[in-house]
Image 1 (cartoon, rainbow, N blue to C red):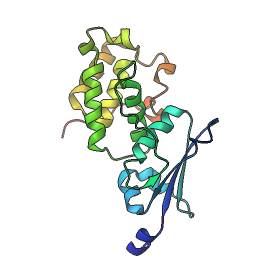
Image 2: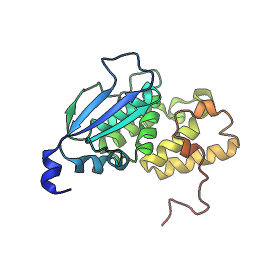
Image 3: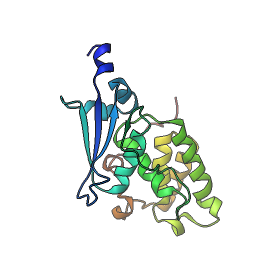
Length: 200
């Protein structure tokens, strides 16, 4: 594809919500003028582009769909704008939203905007169990596993290491798969490499 073609043709990213009952919100469409912008932000969405110039994604639940829409809105374009999910005023101070955001970043192989990392640090500062003064198990049985995954996505070496230690000490972090439903399946089934991925 030539540079002139990439600038003259419009592209669409269409997010469908499985079994959606609100036709005003779903499907959600974002229109982008330069295909290079899609490649820069998400390799998977770019690879999914069809001959009609559309990349279609079906999400299983509204959390995932909202998280993906939040990510896609960072790509220069226009379309069906929706309120950002980057908030900390909900009951868990934005932790659930952050978890689904991290899962979407992982699943769709997205680049990490600085605003997401800054938001994640704010949520960690508010919702981290040591800040709240209670045990992680009291907040959420799988809190350490969730924070370990978020730390992996955002490249937080120290947090990843500390949460990993907590998971090992408690010895059975994956007993209740229902508690880990927000995490990508490939993460839940992945064995950590023997070598230290944070060194070198």
